[in-house]
Image 1 (cartoon, rainbow, N blue to C red):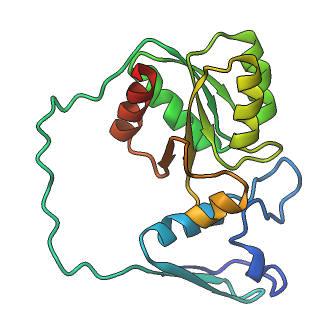
Image 2 (image 1 turned 30 degrees about the vertical axis):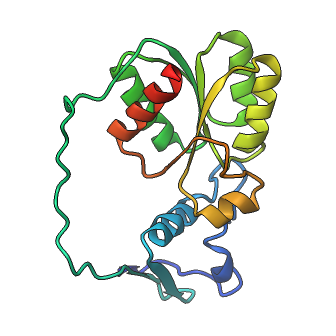
Length: 205
C-alpha cells in the first residue's frame, strides 16, 4: 500500500485514472501515462491494483501480487555476460522523458548513435534529416502511435528494421490497433541486456 495526505481525487475522475492519456493537467504539462503504465506492469505480473480516495482526505493505492510458493533458481548464463553493442544509428521515439533518456544512455554507452524524438511527428522530421539503420518505437504515443509512425517511415525506407516497446497489457495494445503478430515487441520495464540483445538480433537479421 502507498498512501498520501494530499487533496485526494474527485469521484468523477477516480474511474478514469488508469486510462492511457487521461490527465487533469493542462496541455503540455503531462501525458497521463504514469498510472496506466503502473497498471500494465501489475497486470503483467498477474496482480491487480485498487485505489481509495476522497477529496481532502488523501489517496491510497493497494497493489496485490500472487504469492510465490517456490524458489526461483538463477539461470546459468553460459554466455560471456557482456551485452552486444554496435556502431549503427538508431531512431528512438518515446514520449516519456525518463524512459527516453535511459534507453538513449544504454544504447550510446554500447556504441550506438541515437537520434531521439519525443513523439511521432518529431521522429518523422528527424528521420528526414538522418540516415538510420533501425527504429525503436513506443507502441502508444500521443499524436501518432508506433504503428502509424512505422508506416510513415517505411514509405521512405521500406527495409527499415523496427522494434516496438510497450508497458501496456496485450489487450490495450490490440485496442490501439497495433497487432502483436508479425512485429518485434519488447515489454517495459526494459532490462538493458535484453534490449541490447534484441537490437543486435534485429540488426543482424
